[in-house]
Image 1 (cartoon, each protein chain N blue to C red):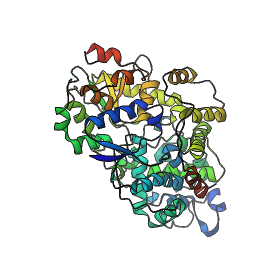
Image 2: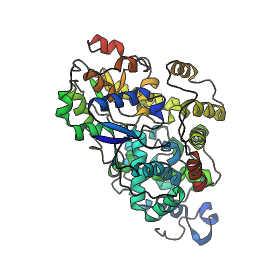
Image 3: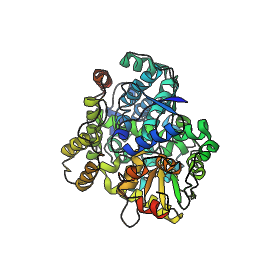
Image 4: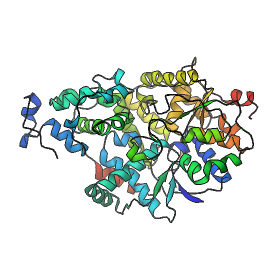
Length: 283
Length: 195
């Protein structure tokens, strides 16, 4: 299959291992990615926290660019970008006056014709768990992850339409298909503190320490995420006495499929996952 | 827009906020453009699930009550509205579908536009640095954005070791690809300016 690809700013910077692993896994699954032409930032939290119209118009510029293509699916790996795109589509569809105004600001139409999709959703639903399982060359035996979905893939549910919003299972199933012993836990959808990590680090440390401590209590030896902000906070802000290796889910899919890349991606993490992965004979 | 019943109870805000007897509650309802805040029956489910409630000056439910009471200055001047991380748990769980997350966005916007500013100054400094970076490049360059934030906040040295480590790993670049049609991005900022 062929889809459009919106990496977003983080995937070209602090989350570059997410970008590289999404691309590696997509290639192995026969998903061709075409980058959205001349994309710009989605505005993230800073736009919607301060200026509603800006928070709709910034993603709308990218949606309009994506609508020019024949490809109707846009893969958006970053949970924050995913949420801003879905929110913009939601507001534009429900408010005709806003749509007119935003189209005037952009100087182009935004029809809402593209489907904004996270790779978890594409891998599980379009490729299918059976196919994914069939591509596994090295089962992730001994890896005990908890799936950490965070906020922005799921809420608000009528906007995101991703998975069960209190107990999502897609990522659990995906990791299970890779042979991992996915641990059930109650903190799948709790917040990591998001962008407060820079301005109120003290609060974010408390939030992530609780998450990681709960992951440990659930018997996990690592945490898996699909969000660059969650990754940054869990990987870099957790206190030394509780911290665990944190992975982008695509890094583990690539590892299970025997693809090139994991060893170099793991070097980019703050908490080095290599001892865990090597200790289990997976690397 | 939902009309409220005059101006009860009388507060200083009510007396001064203007033509056509528009209350603070009216203003907020107008901005969130959805279920009116009056529909809240104070079950406090929003607050029970709020991951930041423990560090907030007033919890989310109290903020709703204060809006209903017309306490504009206290609400806009509170740290609460800047500590909300927009996790959207409140709106997801509210039995009356009051969009508290969007309400927090609206309150922040009102605090900026009305000149009250931000009680949590660094949170706003971060947003300003972030948006300025988009305006200039179309895309975020995390290094330059962080430097700009540090200059604005005066918090120069926290995370320096972490920053150097990330730089050495090639995760923080000084130069990164920009949006080519930067004028279209700047146009969006100019045309949505609200302050």
